[in-house]
Length: 232
Image 1 (cartoon, helix red, strand yellow):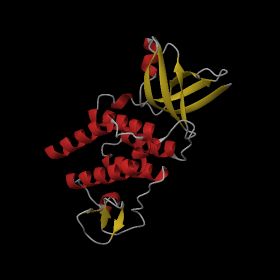
Image 2 (cartoon, rainbow, N blue to C red):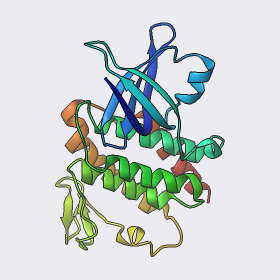
Image 3 (cartoon, rainbow, N blue to C red):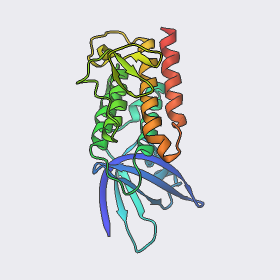
């Protein structure tokens, strides 16, 4: 049986001497995995890079691992390969998606929110706000929504993980104006707050259930952004 998909490469590792095992997020919101035979050849290695958009063909033969072949697809990311902020953002996004969906699971709209953000990030000069919108959209579609659009309470409780109308030792001010796009400058305090809220909700509700940790790629991108903002 042969199936065709378009999507984003999330993960790869060497399988045997010259092959690659890959995970691929399809536009059908599924996680596809299989073997790219000869994946370490120069031609295939240049195609099967994490974060690249691909058109792939997947062959299913009896009980063997799926055999995958592919070609590059739009949007092409060659324009951001030398931009350390954008390329590390891409690695952050793909690593988070990879641990947010499991094989055989279908998460509605996970491809859409990923594609919407990456398409903007690739071409825009200012895109950090969209990155955090993606993080909160990711929480929403995997079942842990922070409904900041319909809840205008000033504070967010980091223990109960919900909006509250009072300040306490466990709460922080939620940056509603950041999401409303009312601020012209990205404030480092707000960025700290957004990372903290996302991490608390994601770890407590998702990662702890699967005994997982936040990916190194996420931490690296976070450090880069914090460092850049401190220099401004």
